[in-house]
Amino acid sequence: MIKYAYLLILFTALIAAACSSDTSADYSAAPEATETETVFGAPFTPAAYLTADELLPLITDEESELMQVSAEVTEVCQTKGCWLVMQTSDGQPIRVTFKDYAYFVPKDLAGQRVLMEGVSWKEITSVAHQQHYLEDAYASEEEIAAITEPKTGYYFEATGVVIL
Image (cartoon, rainbow, N blue to C red):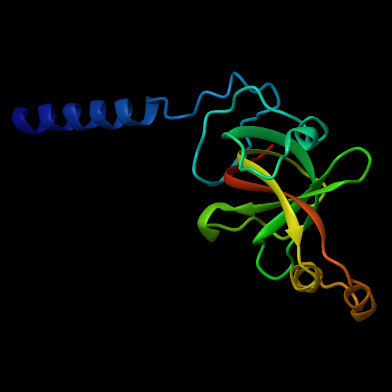
């Protein structure tokens, strides 16, 4: 009987220790992070980040180094949540895709702030791709038909996204 009492005490101590261990990530470097954040993609440790306004002049034809950007989401793919758009203060869109198409974000994310880690670049976006993005956003046929010229697009490929 004493043997069972010792086993019960040991089991209770193990359960208590497991429940009290701290497995939360350290987000002290990102003052905007909260305990209610949601992470999509690869986890990362928030660090010094850029805003969309700070990012835009740094975007070149070559893929950038890994960086973090925090911005408000202005648009999300309404088909799957497979891309989002952030904008600079003067309205320049930066389209965000997700590394290896490995994850999606909620389709109702517009208006919320996110912190993302990834790389940026710019390239000429074809008419077909521009129209495809509008189709994903459920744009009208008139809006889609109005796209007739390729244009320079600014891109960010996120390896991970934290909803703040």
